[in-house]
Image (tube, rainbow over the protein chains, first blue to last red):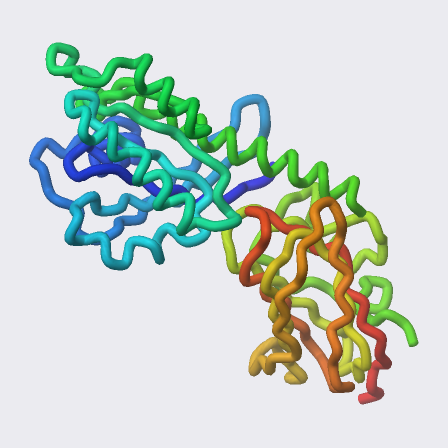
Length: 186
Length: 139
């Protein structure tokens, strides 16, 4: 059994629910921040995920970054050496969807050689009547940018774990693959 | 001169920041070519190896994969503290091949050695062996 450690940044526009998603996942769905508080500083939380069918686990170091424009000054230093990203957008606001690729590219550039991919996550999926981005659009953009697509509702706590379990498994698979290469290189 | 950085010579790992039971830190000092210590995510990573006695070391070679910046420090104290830099190197990367590096060092007395991996060309790196030629000093 091995414990792997992954640095994962939660990025996306302001008020898409990055902190809500992070906190809902971190608290196993027991905590949804009902009142909005703007994230002014990057916030770190750690959550361990067991990898199915193995004794292994991945400790996700989740860095919840502020989305607000004026607070972007030191953000690249937090993205440095980042392994994976969760790019969050709000399915009821298409502008946040359009901006998600800008966020991805920014993270990819800042992260450098450690970067291995991530997920595009449509939040607020419970607000079906106000939806501006449909699942197919999300899947399409995710595919062209080498991400996997998920939707969730931090408010309902639905499908919150899925994207995080996905990136943990991705990290684990990458490790196993790399170690296999190290064996053959020797 | 023998390689002193081996378990059979009494060297042992006292600290490592990554631990995969299949590729444990001890693989570094087991004297085998094919085994390695793998890091398990994020940087920096470090490993400290202690020798049974103060040892006069003349050469230092590492065999690794995917390491970018590596810093090697030594301590000649009884306990592993008071580190001095021995080398600080940016290794070159060649896809699919191990990195063999001869770190040019001046002969010195070493009791503990500390290897700090500051960055990698990949999220994970491997350290296969450290070869240090030297002779223990009678105390």
